[in-house]
Image (cartoon, rainbow, N blue to C red):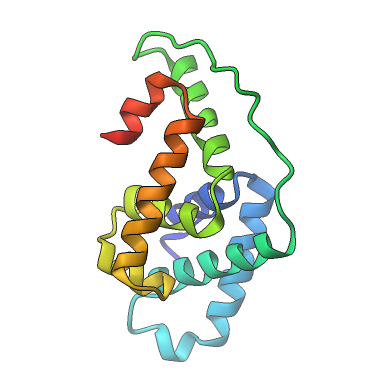
Length: 156
């Protein structure tokens, strides 16, 4: 599938772990294959994303993550510093891991995949109001988890 690098990134953002992301994507692609005749003329990548989000929620319900943030903010460097950007990415991925699966899915779909509230609601099988509430709650939670320098980047 031509969009597999993008799907891999979405899987990683959902799981926070490269091996779990590979497993999630493989599971979603296997499910998609079973329905290929029905979806091939539509938007298969969107279908795979929807399957990944639902599968991730199912996995999360079976086993809750034990990882916790240390509470210590990493030192911030100049904006152009690659090391600081890497630290920011790692910190953001760790913070995403502490969101509920539905909140994480909403944040990834809305801000990483740049989908509308209506598109996000359709993929997750919920109402637009639920997407708005989950987005609000997730952003509020991220503000408590992220250091002040990253909070302005997340809010904008």
